Image (cartoon, rainbow, N blue to C red; front, side, top):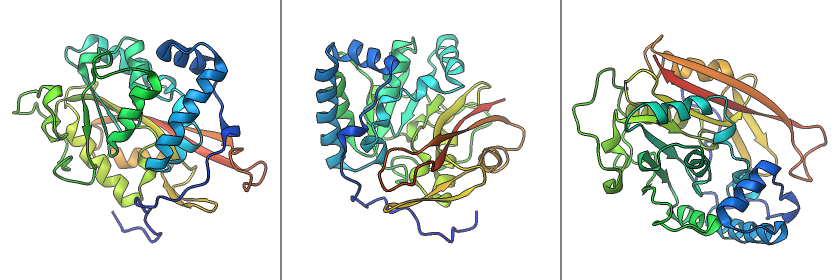
Length: 302
């Protein structure tokens, strides 16, 4: 891929807008989910609990999804391909699900609640502190929520080395998830990968590298899938976030072309994309009526 002419996202930039409790928003479904998992039934007590964990997490790294309470949106359970994921977990024996960029582990907790076998799930994030805060947020422990967590940087080959996708079964044994210290032993063994609010952290070239690396983990068995959602645009290019940075966004067409033809051989995967528009109301310095787009998607091996 050609090098981007725009500046790369600075992954070490620890500046961000201040936290604003007025942005706290949780819909009825998410409220019931949080009450169920935390045991906190009073809405105001639950709000204060969430605000406390949010503040701790934001001090570790000021991701916008933390500042805007996006971790309360139950993203995985609302993806168009979610039912397909649950069916895969139910019908394929030992179907490993990797949640990459898992943050608090909120999405895989939804999958576990809805029946995905907990023993087949593994989570990974750059910041292990977020995983620990997930236990605090949901009032769980490694014993009550025993999903293995593997900390690491997706751009570190010792953690996740990009390799071409496999088109025949791997010649390595399926690793025991609890023994993993990197994601590399999972090459060709992962049935499903969830990656939401993740790809848009990176520029175009970096997104290509991450796509390569994740494709190398995916099982060649038909039905294996990658799914997620992130910032998008009707036409690929940069979205300027006032006062913060630029964000490279794929369009539905460019995202499809990336996976079907560049990452995987043409015609060996089915790519589905859904571009959603919403009005920005999360910052006072954004003009009323400003629109932004998110891209929900899935890639399924044929």
